[in-house]
Amino acid sequence: MSVSKKDFKRILQSVIEVNDNAVVNVLLMIYERQTYEEQVNQDTIEDNGMGFNGTDGEILSSFSAQYLQKGYLSTKQIEMARKKVKKYWGQVLSILGNDLSTITTDPGTTEHDITEYNPQAEQKEPEAQETDLYLWK
Image 1 (cartoon, one colour):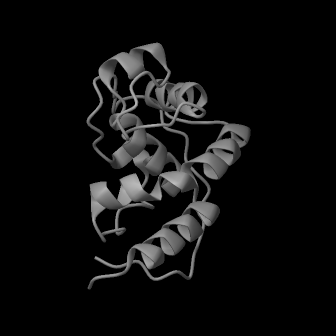
Image 2 (cartoon, rainbow, N blue to C red):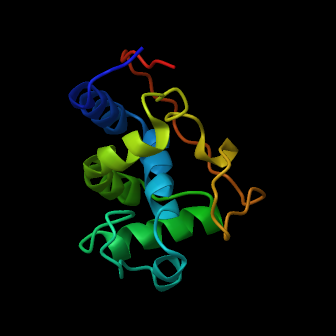
C-alpha cells in the first residue's frame, strides 16, 4: 500500500506524539545518519542533508549517545526529543519507505548500525502506550 508523503508525515508525527519508543527509534535512525566525526564530536559539522541539523546536532547527539550507552533517556529528555524529532520525517521516509511497522518497537530490541551500540546495556522498560493509528507494512 502506498501512502502520500503528506500522509506519512501526519501519521509518523502522530505516532511520535504518543509513543516513547517511536521517539527513540527516530532519534537513533537520524543519529545513524550523522557522520562518524559528527557522532564523536556530538555536533553537526557537515551540511549534507543527513542527520541532525545544526540547531539540534549537539543536544540530540548527546541524547543518542546516552541512550546507546545507558539504555534510557529521562522523561524530560524524551519530551524534548519528541518535539525535535518530528521534523526529520523526510529522512525517516527515505530510511523506512512506507513501512512504519517497526517504529514503535522497543529500541533495545532493534539492531542499530552504530559503532557504540551495546545490546547488553541495561534497558529501562518504557511505559506502554496505545495508539489507535493504523500502521501498515
